[in-house]
Image 1: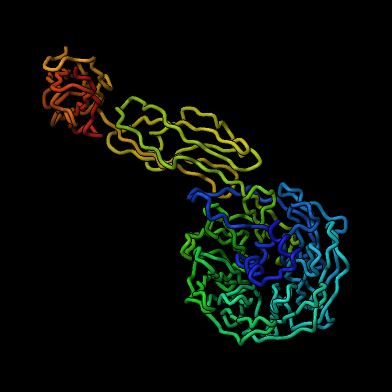
Image 2 (image 1 turned 180 degrees about the vertical axis):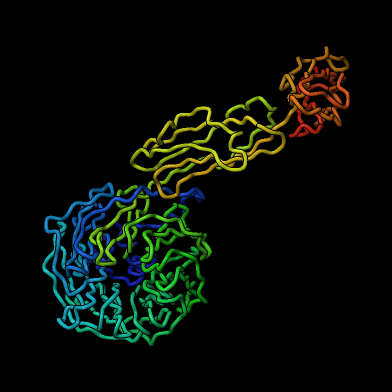
Length: 606
């Protein structure tokens, strides 16, 4: 994994640390990489139904990393109700098994954690912020990894008042990972400088603003030194502390965001060079805020986008594979996680909801099955009411349909068009059950006539659905093919358009044999039928149109009207004036819907 190689080299260049952290702290740990070269996709994404795994009591947050070196993401969960960290080993398919040593005692009420190589041995370690650990000198707990999914007993460190958020980076450019903790009741952050061996110096404090809940690390002014972004719950802002490159930080500059921000993450939302933007979860309202970076350590005025009820944690990743960062927000006030899709300009869509248990807490993104797509993991344990001991996984199993719209030709009443095909593709690892139905203004005009999909889309494969059009009335008819299943993002939709007409022209085309220039073919009859059983057809014009219209002629028995269920004849001849392939159309203008109706005419002059 890219980040393991970086930590094995002990992060000797601070710029490389910034690359590791720039998208978002835990997304980077999870191995998510933006793939800007991927083709843009406007299709809905499909997350499989939630699957849950047992943890300790009141799981508050989690981190994803490869703890046993098998190339598969594992999970560590901070259990605030039992003062423990649970370790679950990933199986590579989105499922997890408790580690051989499943739990580790840490400080009082652990609420946030990170995974990084703290002692430079190429193995992932864990650092935990313990909200009630200050009195026992347990504000920070460090678990050094053994490389097999187990950890040494926690080493505890003193710290600030009510540690709530934690992040990491090389703050003094010595090649070792340092730690920073946001102190909810201290109105400050604690910086722990690494001694180079996974132990830490005495804490140093830097002012933030009122009741900081979270902290993230990035290089906001592009000077090669790491800076801090701190979400302040009671002052409704984010503090920016620019790093001096020697482990110290400048005084905070505050930027207003939404009500009661509880989390802040960093990502390049617009794709610019050396660009870092901020996203906050505003727990006191129903929004997230975006602060677009100017590249010089300052930020623009907040942009606000709707999320769910009391969003408190966010995870940034490219969930729909279009090369643009999206946002997942866990909604503590509702049983769901919202996915908001980015547009590459710093704006976000209305949320797609993934249904979880009540009071979801921390949320992270990671590729759990190594299929190149970020999955979503969320802890469920915000209250003392059961269930409050679960971590829930949503596997990202995209479905794509192509095309996204079908247009049918003008079709006579009482007849059925030729079938058109929709291809449905799954890039996931399991078959996805689906059903196909029709909605919209005229759903009864469209039918599924066949295809290979049946009742499911094969895993990692494609199938087809064929659709026909049988208009029940004249003029424009519209509908929607809805491809539904038990996945978030359901249904996929295909817009359907056709035109019903009471005019039938038979045959549907005429191809004349080769004809000598200056001569005329025998006439070919075309039957014009009024397929309506109740309404007289008014005919306003019958004409030859198109590029070579002078090479074709017509005569007809049709008048200006045609009674219901009656027919008349149009005779068409081919009289080429030049050599070569020639083409035109026979066109009828009328009030029968879909006017003008036409059939193609072709012939070769010789």
